[in-house]
Image (cartoon, rainbow, N blue to C red; front, side):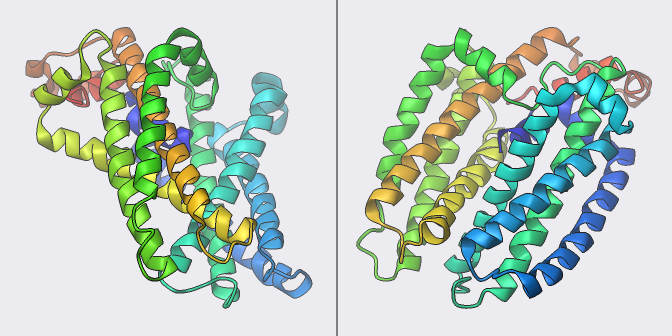
Amino acid sequence: MLHRMALRVLPSLSLAVTEDSVRKRKRIVMFVPGLVAFGIYRLAKQVMPLADPLVLLSVSSLVAVMTALLAYRVGRSASWATIAREDGTRLLSWLAGWIGAVYGLQLSLLVLALLWLVGYDYLQHPDGPAMMAIIISCTSVARDAFEIGHVRNVSLMGRPVPTFPNGVPLRAMLREHLAPAGSWTTVGLVVGAMAASLGLAAGSQQIQALIQVAAVTLLGGGIALCAYLSGAHPSTPWTDTLRRTAPGELLKYWWWPGMAFASTYYLVVLGGLLFMLRQPGVPTGGAVVGGAAVTAMMGLYGYYLGHRRQVEDAQTPQLTEGMLRCPFVMGILGKSPTMGAAIAAARGSKV
């Protein structure tokens, strides 16, 4: 789900996908696949054993693959021949495999795990959870694939997009900044294992899982925040940046994407243990390994997002506070794609 974080944290991407015209199209792109997914669920229910978790997840992933490709084409605003020529099979394979199949699978497990936590067990009552797993997964994949297609489209039209939301910039960062990124990943491993060990003495499986989710959420979000500050300001100790940043700004990033995605990833882990591995509950070993992996990932992703923010700020013209407070000047500059990115960068530079 790194692409989702990048689309909202990095100014060049966030500005591109939150324009009013894009939002209007996105609502339609999400609504239509949701209706189609409901129809597919009703049809699949008649011919497939959707009460089997592996069958349900396979159907959900297949629907997500088709949705990702079609939504990407809408965001791309081009024919398939043009997309194949300009984007290539590597990008389309990543889109279908990662944004479609893998992301769709994760979202379905997230839905099933959330329902299990509130006592609505898919294995006992499969119809409702199965329907929600397919539809919610489909609409979320449609949203993100559309946004990625739009980002690709505007970048080909000449708008500066320093970070395309796939794994290429992450791999480049690891080659150049392996030591600091590895340090935050290691810290996340230790903290996550400790967090997921909490609540093991609680009564029911749901109570244990709720305590673990809360601990991983709070600590994983904190790791992501600190790693982000370290990546965004590599020449300054992250503790100094933490002290200088307003508490309200810190809370915003700690909450989203920090805590939001730490909890999301851990719920996906729970869903995998319960419904893919068919565990009767959340085993201690699985909880510890899952918690460690989640917070390690949050440390790595937090540092990566901070690093890319630092790269974008270095490439984007900076605006003074006086210009930011002048509506007339901002209205003129906002019509320029380059200066639009600068506006977004300046407004978000507090964190």
